[in-house]
Length: 319
Image 1 (tube, rainbow, N blue to C red):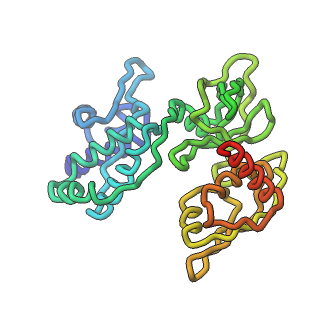
Image 2: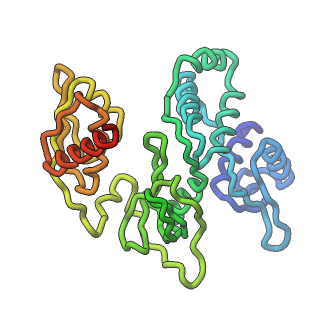
Image 3: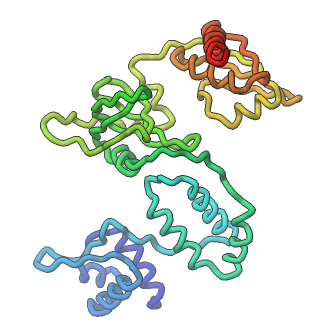
């Protein structure tokens, strides 16, 4: 086996084993311990984070920041991966902000000059715009790690009316929508799942001590099905809204509610239809008022009444 091939296979082996001895590797690769020591030294110089322990039970282990083996990409794959990561630059807060920036820099640096030139030409011609927000999201990494590790977090959460409460939650995951980050989580105070806006979390830490709840087994619950696990089902009302072509375009660009389905006709107009939680009627009333003549609400009566009340309040304000 050539040295370059042995180094490649050795890198993949130590990443897989995590902890090993020189003798184990020497036996596996059929070389001397001296050769393996030289190879490990070269891997360390290449950036593989190895840590040695002395003593009868010592050996080597790979630190948490493992280095993945090289992966061959086609030019089109490399460009698409670069721009997938490049698109995240509009998010000022990410759960892996530093790592994403570092990875993008490495990816760009080791590309051939002609591929870099192609990317440079495309940078100002391809973009993924995200609404600019003034909100801060400092706890994204902790929330994501809590979801992965099945940990309970103690947070202080500020409501829409600026009322701060202490909650103990077990995150399901995090997702971004409209420039904001959200965290579905099981709330031990409410004994049910709740959706938290991450910018309203003013502090967060791992819940420890005798008062900390025992983590639940939420491995089967994820971003795609967490709403199905509400113990208290929301009251739903049927909604139907006629949309002009411009109204369709406006609704397509907004996450109104995942239960609503948009049916688009050949002429570009459409019908927005489906069940909605009664608690979201005031929000939808405000949203549809913003679309003006491009929308006609057909039902439910609760939404029509909410529209009228909101419009009356606006008229009084400006009369």
